[in-house]
Image (cartoon, rainbow, N blue to C red; front, side, top):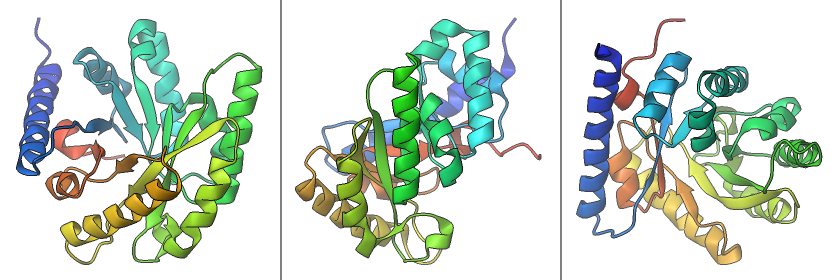
Length: 242
């Protein structure tokens, strides 16, 4: 018997991938872009369906919800669980950072030394206990308008944070992440962020990831050079009422 929800997700996923291909072509880019499917508030059943449809990057905003889904997917299908990469894209409280390092495969939202240190500590502990191997890639979240209450580090503090993360042992400085401010054209904000990302790469050549773009603005982000888009609604539909 067919599963209507799987069919819906398959259709939406294909449409999103077509948008990505068209945006890359319009930008004259020959490279690809990571698609992180954001499953915030959606049930683990959708996570399983997405993994079975070939999605390999899953994104979560909330620490407790993410940890539960990681465990539930592992219980439901260990083989699928081993094939996906979990991306933490939401704000992390410093006292929860160590726990995030135990399940995350990539973190997009590092905005302070305290959070970076917590992730370092958690990853070191997970490695010592044989739970995780390899360093944890970290992207620094930049506040483009300086309103750090919405998450992100102020641009004048970015170089210092980058230097600090680059000096840690169990995590790796992977690049930059942005969420455009509520006011102004996304294309302008992404072009601004791209310049900051390029400066970061000059200082830290390994920090070559640029996480930018969501359901409504991924074309503008790709035109600015995004290497990773974070898409929820366009694939999963409206979030359930909780």
